[in-house]
Structure formats: C-alpha cells, structure tokens
Length: 213
Image 1 (cartoon, rainbow, N blue to C red):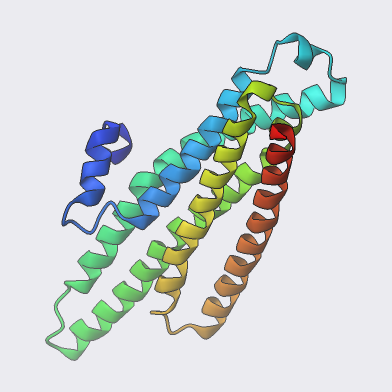
Image 2 (image 1 turned 135 degrees about the vertical axis):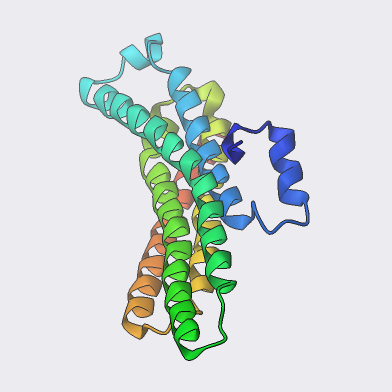
C-alpha cells in the first residue's frame, strides 16, 4: 500500500517506527499537500458566495485560476510522499552493491552518485511545489472567506514547512557529491527557493494577522 493511501494514524505510526522511511522528505511533501488542501478548502468556502461575486472580474478569475492550480499541486505533492521513499530505497540498493573488485567498486560508486542525485531531486521537486503553493495563496488571504482566514495562515505555515523541510534533504545529499559545478548550482537554487518562500510566508501571515485584529 502506498503511504499516501494509509490512514493518518497508520502514516504517523510508520514515521515513528524504527524504519528509516517514511522520513523527513515524505513528511515535508505531506506538509505541503496539507497546505495546499487548506488553501483549496478556503476556495471552496469562498467561490459562489455573495462576497465573492461582488469582486471584480479580474480578481475572480485569478482566484479561480489559483484554486485550480493549488488542487493540482496537492496531487503532485501526494505523489512525492511515496517518491521520496522510492528514492531512498534506490540509494540503499546502490549502497549494498558488491565492492570486492575494482570493477565492482567503480560500478558501486557510479550507482551511488546517480542514486544520490535522484534522492535530492525528489525533495527539490517537493520544495519547488511547496513554493508554488505559497505563490498562489495571497489572493486567498486577501479575498477568501474571512471566517477561514486562519486556515490560509496555517496553509502558509504548512507550505513553508514543506519548503524548508524538503531542502534539508537536498542539502544533506549535496554534501555527498563530487561534482562541484552541480553542487554549486543546486545550492544556489536552494538558497533562492528558501529566500522567496520566507518572503511569501511572511506576506501571507501579515495579511492573516491584519484580518484577525
């Protein structure tokens, strides 16, 4: 059974177990999925209401477009919950390859390098998708059902947790690679994602708090 198909209790217990997976990468993807789901919920509680219909056409279109986008991202993040485990399993398979002869050592080294890249590209995808959630949330904070404003705030916190949590996994895997150019490029990408995510999170939380005053 896929992790994403387990009950909440089963998933939590799996995280708690002695097994190395599901770990932080899967949890980060789930956090982002929950953030996108909360955002979509606010959309469902807003679209069609009188206050929504009173908005200008441009705002309504943006709201509807962002609603459709965030639901698709939720599905993508759900997939990444399990893909993170698959990537880790691939790395462990490479790690267990024989290393008796020089040929075996070379083959193992190459396989581990490829598996490490896969193991960091998956959480990098997670971080990017969680950032995309944050990019979509402002219109919900500004124009969503005021009774659900705290759900926008929690959604932003969850999406941001998904970003930074996933990037932890990217960085730790980068530390095991020898390709300096690749490592430098990916570290810069991580820095940019994190910086943008922080700004968006603070912007959304600022709107949230202003509506709670």
